[in-house]
Figure 1 (cartoon, rainbow, N blue to C red):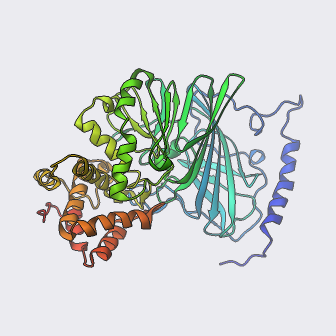
Figure 2 (cartoon, rainbow, N blue to C red; figure 1 turned 180 degrees about the horizontal axis):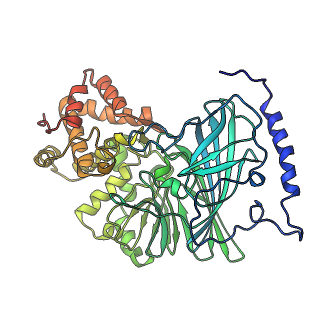
Length: 499
């Protein structure tokens, strides 16, 4: 490591701020009007996505004058998505300040983070909006887009342990790609409603982030929309103010949330608010055309939360609700505290009840305890699928989980220990994952099995965990090595026999 003279960071920041004053002097035209890249200017409208560009020196602020750091690594080490996430810092909080009008988004996203290494630059996962300004601790920072990475070069070196803030101002129409396997990912529009569904990699398509479940953070959403339009997001509504024909909705979510589970919806929606068990804030957002049917379908939300609390322990968050669109999405999504459903959820079917349980169960398994890598997807989907069976066993007299699982086991499901990115959400992740849970339960007995589930939530809640973590915990609780059992169910080419 190269030695460098120690200068207190506050001194370095003051130097950067003084140096940046020269930018203010040249940031207005001869007629006194603001340049388009001035942070005080209204963002210019954009109808198409620009190519990735490098900021001009005058836009970026003073260059770094400190040696001794390193570039933050690209990627969090995920075997399936090697460029998702970034090394060198941990995010503590995101503040998303969005103005949404039609297809365009004008945004300021502020990220509070802590450096985990000495950094002279770092990356954010992001894609090519028009970027108007990037600042680190208030100081303009050189930056460039490199594919789906926003590379930021702060004026003052970030020492390991430093808290810092980066603010990115940008505008343009969000990207809504169609994945050949997953369909649309990220920022979407259907039934006249803008909404997000970002698993596994869609969050950075609409806000700069450390877009990997291994780095969870608190969120605040400040959403400004035309008056008469409803804007909902993860968390609890803390304010709603209307002025000059626009309404600003502020939603706070203080608990750690993986970026892929961030919920946002803007459109003509009916907001239904109430209180659930233990003071949980219940709030739903329904398409007006489905409001009566959706209210009936989700009347049992509080009871369902209580049922799952009896299995897994206290519900982890302060709020829960459903976003129901009058659309054919073909899927549901466990967006944190605001699960997403299409119109099929109101049909009163047995399948719809299972789907509601599945997405709610994800709030323990996936949202509260998140996968350390996407290879661990069975920890989400297998757990939530088996939760459906456990719920049915709890609420339906005479329901025989063992008989149901043995019937499921007659179907061929491939290995899930390494499903590959194209099979993350294949049926094997769900049902062979559930069979793995049932095989463990049959082997260790109900007492140890349910103790393991509760210990999993208690020990790793608010964080991420791996398959290895689960195997170690299950072995600890059972007092016996269950690794061979779980390994066979996850990785054997042929499914083992249920115990």
